[in-house]
Length: 341
Ligand code: 2P0
Image 1 (cartoon, rainbow, N blue to C red):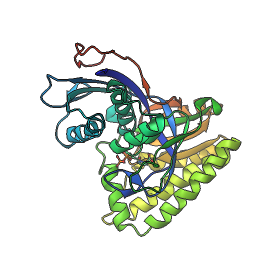
Image 2: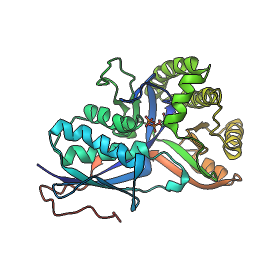
Image 3: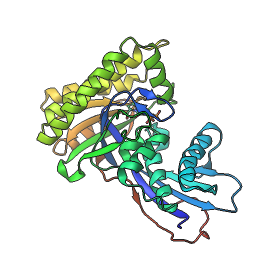
Image 4: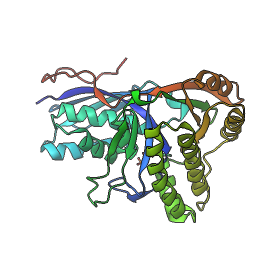
């Protein structure tokens, strides 16, 4: 049995958003969603299981993780340990290549990389579908980052969640779309996305119609991807983000993830479209604006967004591959977890 492994995974940005659970423990969504896996927003994770460890230890960008974040990782590892019938504790060392202060979601790439590393280290031999369902237990959106390209996370119907996992609709080479990610000067997020989606489900009068829209948007988006209909895919992308934020704002007490810079970026996107650029706005559970565009317009849009007041940094992302093992260590358990460079 192998005990060590390293794996990498890219983050993803949803064109049709996931925002609401039918099961909070298993992270089962109320609706399907659809995303692009994005290079270079990458997490690299190394895991070592060792009989000498008394407890799990987690490092994130070189700092020890404690409290509920550490418990969340241990619970995730317990799922695999139970599957394998072992009790070995682990050291997990995880590093993000993208600026974490940026408030970009890292749980998707984080749990996808961790799932891949755990699978290899413990020789679980999960196929990508089962691996995606496992990654989902850590964070819903991680089920999509297991795969590269255009990825659908299907809602599934089963209570055990075995049919709620990512599916690669098309590989990265299918269509060279870009996502321009703007890092807004934002400070701390007002609320985590898990808490926000639960409150939205419990209190927003718009929640039901939001879920209904997501389900049909996913089917339409898959069709638009198959036909390479950029305008259609862009319109769905922008509409899904605005509908999601509408439902979120309708919570009681209200939740507002969008900042002034985010709204300015939305207007800039509409203006660029009027000038003939293929640009569509999206935004997640934070203030960072993101613009879906074609490769032809990407550099111009990147330049426009970077000149917007309040934008600190712009990352031009292309569509990336799924989670991969990067450094198998075989059966040696000598290689202790050290901070990755
Ligand atoms: C998405 N988000 O589809 C949506 C859009 C945020 C807004 O997936 O509770 O961190 O761990 O399953 O995966 C963020 O949700 O939430 C997310 P949990 P997760 O990308």
